[in-house]
Each structure stands twice: as structure tokens, then as C-alpha cells.
Image (cartoon, rainbow over all chains, first blue to last red; front, side, top):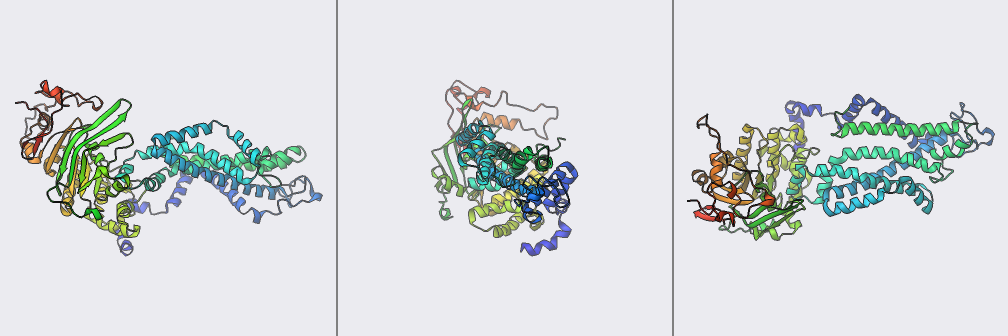
Length: 305
Length: 330
């Protein structure tokens, strides 16, 4: 009934705000991002390039990441090896691309896990309040006493290095810390009249959390996610630099910086420059993008700057 | 639905006996509602009148048992349609909320969720209580929006609350309240945030719809003009207690509690002497955390005697249907 009635009446009766909102909201948002936050849009675009490179690394990499060629050791950048080769004659461009893939995987998986943990803890803590809130928050306090890197090193030293444990540790680490931010947003949403209205309508707590609270804290969650992607990529690089990250011969950016990059810094500076520059650009771009998102999505920040 | 069958004609739809609500706060226990007795007959509109902090909204919320973690509700019994609400579990209570008793709030600007469409929000109670699919509930939402006179309801289903004016949003809230055909609608100052012209429309709509469906209504307000036009009976609250209750016309013609008299006297009137100052009740409303031992109104009452300051007066009939809590001042 609705379906047939809609097209007939829409053109002549729909008031103007509806027509203006007729563009898909995501398209409209991207246009707004480009118009109001050009730097953020630039960062987002840059990050997207790295993301695509990472996703397609296996297809676009000219050589296999661990294919050695002893005849071409420490070659300077050339047409056949755009970024040069390392001390085993491996193609640096291919290694940087596969490195992007590893970084993106760690970044997204860890940030994804962190976001889920933050949402669960933040929703329960913020919405239920009282004793539950007290218990969760004291646990978060205790957890945040430990410096991130120290905790990472301890866990990796105990269970050994590898992608799953790094993702797990980073996810929990950032997730528990980030639950504070979600909690704060939940508390302000909880006091809104529509939450009370939902209660008076007989909705159960989980329903209210999922349909009424979560959508209203999504702006905060999205921003939290983007900043955590950058942080996780950086943390993984730091671990790999210390030799505690994804173990060699996997081409991680951190590992490339600390291994060949440092050893051959004077003979073949490109070995350190390529992964270093990539790391810088990726983390910078996602942070700029995250800042822009925060400015656009968080109503409290609206109008400041 | 199964327990909705028999309600004896003699007993009122809602019977509240000795309802008390207290809150633990940093300043000690605040007794917001103190031994309130009320009843609402089927199809009737009861207005609860009182100033801010008199306990009228808390009374309403406590009927739904929604007073928050730091609040405690005590009652001898709250009999609604033959069921003692005080004895229900939280899960059973959820089946009453929004289904048998629906609520309309004061602020239409914030009582709709800004990120959900109107259609979804109107459909929500039917999905929650009647087991309808979202699609079916959405179809019925069109009819509901029509009943509250929202033009082009099909087109409006996909609008968001910010596309609507305050009056329109309150209409949507009314549609949501009517969704499950409740027996009782509690309207907590439904028009306070609206323009005066819109206020009248909303109240008239509410009155028409409750008459149509036979639902009873508790109308919480501090606006005595609203009471006169839309209420059948009135309960006046002061300091967490009911101080006087009577049929609306009787209360206006013959207010018996000194507080009610003070309220009536302080209403500005169009045909009064323009130069005359508005009459006020001296003093301030009582601090609920620190109520006087006797009648809460005694410190402001021109007739207060020693007796009034010792124990609160009971609510007693002084005429058929007319009760007041006062030791008398003749």
C-alpha cells in the first residue's frame, strides 16, 4: 500500500527539506567533507590510496616480496626497481606494498576489535550506571596505569610475536581505554527524553541500547575508530622495529626500518626512507581525516574553527 | 492481552493507595511523593495540578515504575484494571508500559530520537507489544498518523524528527501513545513547550482521541486554564501530597483547601481591574528534603494553627466526590 502510494504523492506534496535531503546521506556527507574540511578530505583520499595499494598488494607488486636476487644487491632506484633493492636483492617497492597490507590489516583488525570492546564496555558502563559503572570504571582505571608499550612487550615476550597476538593486545588495550569516551557520550544521550520515552514504551534495556543509544553515539565511535587505526599501525611499527612485531621475513615497515634500513643507512638510504615516509604519510593522513570527521560529526565541536 | 479481559464496573480503572516515592540524594532522602491516594475511572480525565516539585510528575513516573536507580516506590497497592502493578516483575511491567498505559512527555523536541525516522518510531510500540513485523507496523503507522491529523502520512514516514515542528512532533508522540490502544494515557505537561495556539489544538486532539478510544487520561499540568477545559476531575498536589481532589467544576466553584484557593486567586483574569496587582501566595514551595512535620502548606497558610504544624492532615471527604487534606479554618 505504501509502495504504490509513495511515487504518486511525492512530487507535488513533499516539502523542501525532504527534497534537499534526497541525495544519499553518505554522498552528501562526502561533499560536505570536501567543502568544509579540504585537508581532512585530502588525508582521507591519501589513506584510501594506501588502503587500496594494501588490498591489491599481491596483484600490483612487481616482484614477490621475498624473491632474492644476489646480482642486484643494494641497487639504487631504477626503472626496473622503482624504489631500489635491499641487501638480498629484494625489490623494495614490492616489500613496501606488502608492508602496507600488513599495516592495514593490523590497523583495521586492532581498531575494529578496540571499537567493539569500547562500545560494549562504554554502553554498559554509561547506561546502567551505579554499581556496574563503578566496577567497570575502576577496572579501566587499573588497566590504564600500565604504559601501552610495556604491556605489549610483556605479552609478546610471553606468547611470542605474531599478528594475532598483536591484534588482540592492541585491540584490548585501545578498547578498554576508549570505553571512557563511549561512556561519556552514552551518559549524555541517556539523559535525553527519548531514552525515557523508550523506557515508558516498555522496551527492554538491550533494545534501547541497540536502537536508541548506539545510533546516537555513532559519531563518537566512528572518530574513535579512525584514530585507533593510526595508533595501531604506529604501535605495530614500533613493535616490529624492536623485533617484537610480525616476525621476519614478513616485510613490515617497522622491521624494514630497523633491519636493513639502519644497517645500510649510509650506503642505501632508500631502504629507510621508503618505509619511513609511507608510515609517516599513512598515520598523518588518517589522523587528519579523523580530526575532520570529529569536527563534522561531533555536534559539540560544530562551529569551533 | 489475556489479562485484559475482565474489569469490574464498580472498581475504578486505576486505584492508587498510599503511594510514596523517595530518592536517595547527597542531601539525604527526599520524599517526593508521600502517601498519595488517587483513582481514575475508565474513560475519565484526571488532572494532577501543582507547582514544580509538588510531586506530580514523579507520581506519574512511579505508576510506570520508572523512577531511576536511586528512587524507591512504596505503595499499599496500585490496582490497574484488576492487576496490582506493585506486584509485577520488571518483565511483566514492561508489557504494561506503552501497551496498556502509555505516556506522553513534556518536551516534544527531545522525546523523539533524532536518528530514527518517524515511521520507525511510531511503529516501535506495535513491534514491541503486538508482535507485528516492522513492515506491518509501518503500514499501521500510516493510519495512526492520519488519526492525529498529520498531512500526507505516507510521505512523512521516512522523515526525521528535525523535519517536524514542535506541535507536529507532539502529534507523533500522541500517535505513538495510541499505537497499542492503551486503557490509560499519562500526559505529563504535554503542551508546556508549545505555542499557545498549538497547545489548544493538541489538547483538543488528545481529548477527542481518548473519547474515541475510551481511554482514561491523567493530565499533569500546572496550567489551571487547561484543567478547566479538559479535565473531568482534579487532584491538587502540594509538597508531595494530594491536598484536594474534586470534580473540575466543583473545584473551581468551591475550592476548599487554602492552597487551592491561593492558586485560584493568583490566576490573572481578562475582566479584572487592569491596575490591580496579581495576587500571590507568600513564601516559597517547601524543600522536599526537609519537609515540616505537619501540613506542608502550614508555613505559607494564613489559617495555620498549632495543630497544623504537628501532623499532616488526612485527605477526608467534605462533600460527595470532594476530598481535602486540611484541619479546617472556619
